[in-house]
Length: 140
Image 1 (cartoon, rainbow, N blue to C red):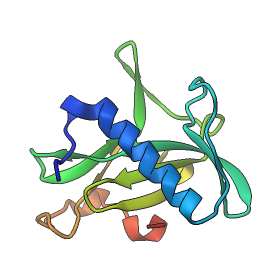
Image 2: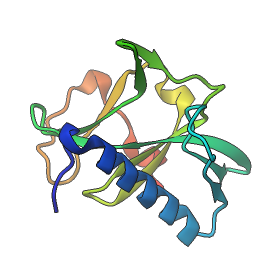
Image 3: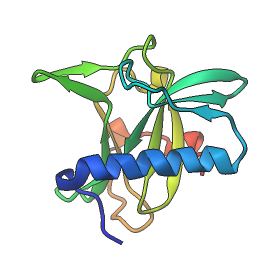
Image 4: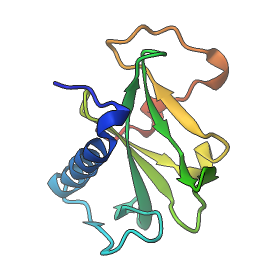
């Protein structure tokens, strides 16, 4: 299986959104996709008893750190802009290599610009000051 790089980011993002949607359909959980991508959310999902706006992020392998990475901000004319709670409630994070999905609440990552993930096959040396508890939010 080919690992995603920045060179094929649009294709990886589309595959990530498809993988995310298919999981919720298979689990018979309500999921809907907005007709237009104007508000930052890729899907609306029934999650924990509420309808939640979700922005899906597909991880890519950062070969310099040997870890998977997602950016939690958008680039608007060269300025990194964070998402707001008016736009999304969760990040739906997808790792296509490991076939994993996490539902990460915006409020637990709203001070971060990115997150890193080391799977079971990557070297586990991590900086302890910025580690993130991925298993707490894993849904697949």
